[in-house]
Image (cartoon, rainbow over all chains, first blue to last red; front, side, top):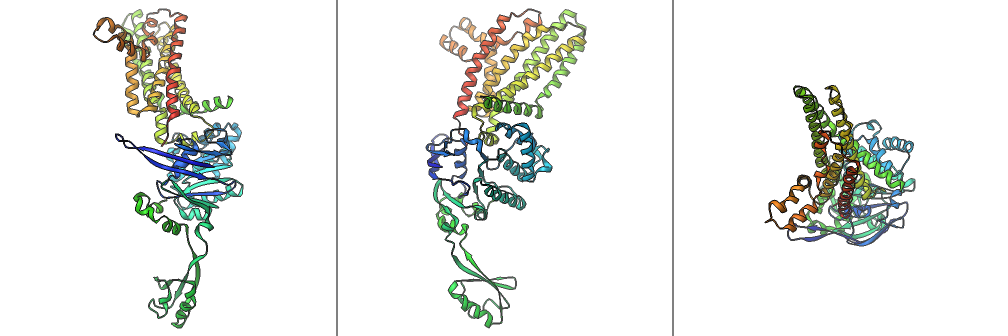
Length: 316
Length: 258
C-alpha cells in the first residue's frame, strides 16, 4: 500500500531542475489478486518498483508491504522481485545464481538445490542449468530472472515487464506461470506494455500517466464491458452491394467482407447480404479493449509526450 | 546477527568466485615466470647478494600485482554492479546495502589473501629450488603488504561510490602514490618552507602513510620486525579501514539507483 508516494529525478548538469517521475501515488493491493500496472514509457512504472524495493528513496510519501514500512527488510523474506531487463551475473550458471539467491534468504543447502531444480524446470531452463549465463539469450535471461524472483516461494511478487524479450512460447509460459501463482493464492503486481497480457491476466489494472495514477479498478469497470458494436463476416457479395451503407465500416479481406455494424442496424445489413445472394459466415460482438481505453482516455499523452505515444504500446 | 553474517559471507563468496572466473588470478602466472627467470639469472651473483635481490623482487612483485588488483577490481566491485543493475534483484532480497558493501570488500580481500599466499609460496619455492635459505620472516613483510592492499580496496570502493569508474581509478592511484610518499610530504616543511605548513599538515593528515606498510627492504636484509611494530601497523590500518569503509558505506547507502 502506498500513500502520497512521490519521486522526482534531477535533470541537467549546470542548471539543475527536477523532473517528477511519480506524483502522490495512492495504491492498495488486495491479497491474492493480480494487479496490472500499465502506462506509457516514462509514466513512472519502474520508478514505483524501485521505490518499493528501496533502490531509490521517495521525496515524500509512505509505503508499506505486509503492514511493514518499505525500509524494513523483514517483509522481503516473503516477496520476490524481477527487475526490468534483468542483468544476472554472466559468469554464473543459472543453478549457481539460484543457489546464491537462496543463500540470501537463508535457505538450507538441500532446500536451495531442490528449489533450483524445480524453478529451472518451471521456467523451461532445466537443460541449461549448468550453462554460464553469458551464453544465454535475452529470453533465457528473463526466465532465469523470473526463477530467482520465485526462489523463496514468495507470497507477493513484483514483476517489472516480465514478458519483455520473450518469444511467443516464453510469453505463454510466463502468462501460465502468473495464472498458476494466482491459483496458489499469491499476489502479483506486474507492469506491462502488452495490453492483451493485462487483459488476459489481471483482476485489476492501475493506469499511470506522466507519473500520476489515472485510475485503478477491475477491467470490467474500466472498459465498460458492453459490446460497442458487432463484427460481421460475409461471403459471396461485393462491397458496393445496396443496403450495406448501414454498416459503420466495410473492409474486403481476401474474398470476404468484414463489416462493423451497430446493434440496431444488424437486421438491415443481414437482409441486404442475403438479398444479394451472399452468406453471413459469423457475427461477433466487439467490446472495448484496454488498448481502446488507452487511446481514448490517454489521447493527450500522445501529443504531450512524444516518447509515450502509440509506438510505446507496440513494444514487446 | 547470524543471518547478517551468512548473507555477507554469501556476497563475499560470490565476489571471490567472480574474480576467479574472470581470471584475475592469472597474474600468478606472470609472478611464476618472473620468479623462474630471476632464479635462473641471479645464479651468477654471490649467494648472499642474490638472495636479497630475489626476496626484494618477489616482495615488490607481490605488492605491485596486489595493488593493481586492488585498484582495478576494487573500483569495479560496486560501480559495475550499479552500472549493470545486477544488484537490483539482490537488494530486493533481505540483503542490506551494508551487507552487500562489506561482503564485496571481504570477497576481494580474500582474493588478495589467496593471491599473496600463492605468491609467497612461489617465492619460498624459488628460494628452495635455487638452494637459498627459505626465510619464514618473509611473512613479516607480506602481512603489512596485505594490510596496505585492504586499505587500497577500501579507497577504491569509496571513490567508486561517489564518482565514475575511471575517475575512481585515478583517485585511488593518487591516494596510493601520495600515501607512499607521505614521509616526503611531511619533510616538505624543511625542504620547501614556502609551502604553507597548514597545507602540508592537511595533506599529511588526509592521506594514509602507505610507507608504514613497507617492510620489504628490512626483511630482505634479514632484519627482524618486532611484533609490537606489526601490532602498531595493524591498528593503524584498522583505524583507516573503519574510516574509509565507513565513508564508502555511508555514500553507498545514500545513493539512488536510477
